[in-house]
Length: 509
Image (cartoon, rainbow, N blue to C red; front, side, top):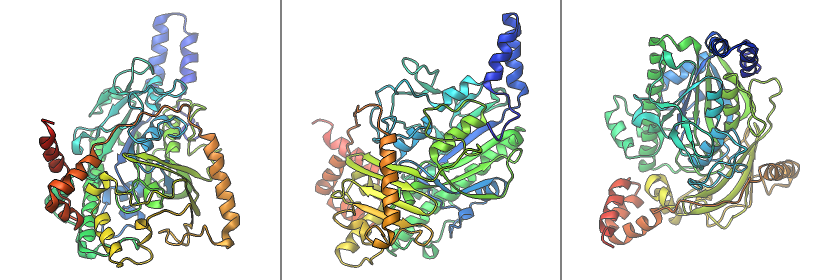
């Protein structure tokens, strides 16, 4: 440990307990050490499908006063990246603190009945072992924030031995003084695509004006796309209110001074180039740490951070030993030095992709090993939940997209992509074929191949979940053509409604 040198480590607990002459004294020593160490509570707030689309990151048209305050009083990181742009592989990496490819948890919603390889342990077990109560969700956030979504066999609550006992958390929904020290992981779901987007916008006292939003240059300026972007920002503002509610509760319970609060996204925003893709909007996430008791507030750090580093940092904060199998490193350790984050995109529903990337604070490199699979692969999930895809697909066919907007809809992907993130933050100019950058390209190619080798999966077990989405879309086109036309025009027609109709049509077949 570096930042929290004053905290008592688990090694000292064991040493003190073993020096006692009888069982009673041993129990007293262990209990006293845990309580007297004043170890911090830790809350990990994880917003779903969330890029750096906050006011404190310079995002226009959105108000996030609670996260602004958290950033001013804490530390904001500019270069934090997930290791996969899809929820379950990304969350798997964070739950173990180890890159998802290495643990063979890299294929979305796969291996759900397969035990985690015995060399790995969920970080929540490491926290439990040093006296932390681990808590999932919160009773007052939207849908209780209890999502786990990892690609190995597990249970939400219960003990863990990796074989028969597979519980990841001790309890759900509430944290109290009796739980201290506690770790709580709370999912902020509203920013994830869902039918609630319209409902939350309708209830907002200050819905974002679609006419004033600022779209990225790779998105077409169209009324349906502007509305969809405004809806997303409405969810961001609702989520910010939830963050404020958590802080208010900490204050009311007298816990705010001894609680570390961490805010991140689980992957990038659910839109063009975002969730599911190794471009910047899919990998770069917001990352803010609040703990004014020990960390100087108001800092803005440009150091490159992987989501697995956040896991390792939490383990370090708790006073536990960071295991050697973790590919993440404690961020505040003096030895911390990360040049690249290694990204991977593999199976996502019915699309079996294979792409790898490395990202630094200046460069982003992507290697597409299946260039024949286009970015717009007509994936069923995206058909229902990305109005911009439908609108821009039509504009592409009509020849109405500009050079910044076309690449996502081309019939193939480039084999390699290289972007200078300082000069080209929106990744509009692929430098991979520019001979002036051959030296940079060669360096990043080699770095990617090194990571490929280092992250070789521990097994080749492959048991994906078969998704019903493709069959539903095919049925929708045939049986509900008017609804499909509305979808193509950029209207969200209701995934649950269509799924229910599909099931009704097939219940006797």
